Length: 286
Ligand code: BTN
Image (cartoon, rainbow, N blue to C red):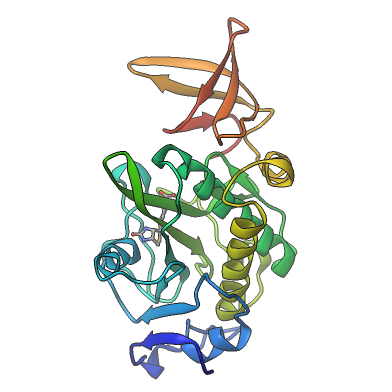
């Protein structure tokens, strides 16, 4: 495809695995290009066979003034990072793994909106493309049947109170047939939920388009329709939750999402507080 700026590392054809009852595919340039219909997000696409972390790779590209909306995707990460310092592990070709960089003219504290809009976009793309009832666990876990399907790690760089860039890194479990015993009660994949072959290239292109649409339609803000949609897809809202404030564990009910992306929680003493980050334990969800 012309005007599509893509660095493609040669891929090992032997790694197209024949599975007993269906044939899986890996991310490849041609197939993604055939499906991609965006003007900013993924217009420049770097597709790698293996990398430590797509977030870290993009951080290095940011130093070379890469374009707004550049996407780095990979078939495998060797040092994938999760939120709160955790690892993000996935076998080669099992997941859709990518990061997108934006250079928006916003305040660092507005970045939460971008992360939440990204989660909304991923959730909507999967629902539309695969007809699967996935939801969001605030702030940005993608869940199906109360198990985790995917996660988002956003990292930003700011200087003198001004945002330089934000990198949104997304991992979606696609082809895993089972998970290690320690996490099998809380992790799932598209395959586990649908028992169907997943066209990862097509889904990936749809997700990029959905992200671009949500960013542009909502001007990077979580207001109006985006806030309504996020709230209706957010499985956290309406449930009993607990979280830590310092050493203290607080309990309450999640009652809504604020326009700045924070979670509104009615505490046991009936006061309402807002949560901006961190981990919440949600009753009924892993
Ligand atoms: C989480 O739920 O803890 C967030 C997981 C984010 C994983 C993605 S995979 C692509 C990008 N690169 C990384 O190293 N992490 C994110």
